[in-house]
Image (cartoon, rainbow, N blue to C red; front, side, top):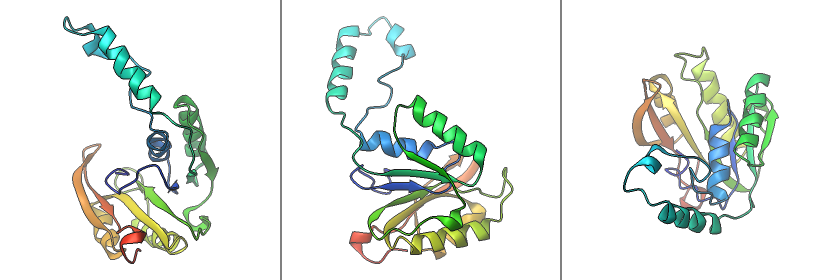
Length: 193
């Protein structure tokens, strides 16, 4: 989703509905240019044609491209358990992101630019007032007028998300639920949300 939104890691990113922190952690990894999977083992490493030497060369090259996290990555959620999980997951991923407990309606304004990215509740497995969440997300986006917005939306939220000026860039499933990835125009390409 964040790559589909044009996130390169050179601008701040905020997930105001972070849950376990996945989006913010991915944004940090992208910003750090850390290649996925460099610290784990894969089944293909046991294949007869696998070259450990070539693999180590690829890992070494990937690690040479890594850099320190130079942009602010924020994550927040109103649920204390989600905040604790996000902090634990960020530590496990070895990324330093700002994780705070707060309601979406309390997201501070920011006059700069960046990406506001989230996977809000769809109103299917997690009970939520989808219309209220979208209204609060729209208000949060107004407080960050030069930020662009990306979100995953279930069917119930997709129509409301389009009213926020978001356009679908991908249709897929998340946990068996049909979803769309919706993205607003970048602030530098015209009016945003």
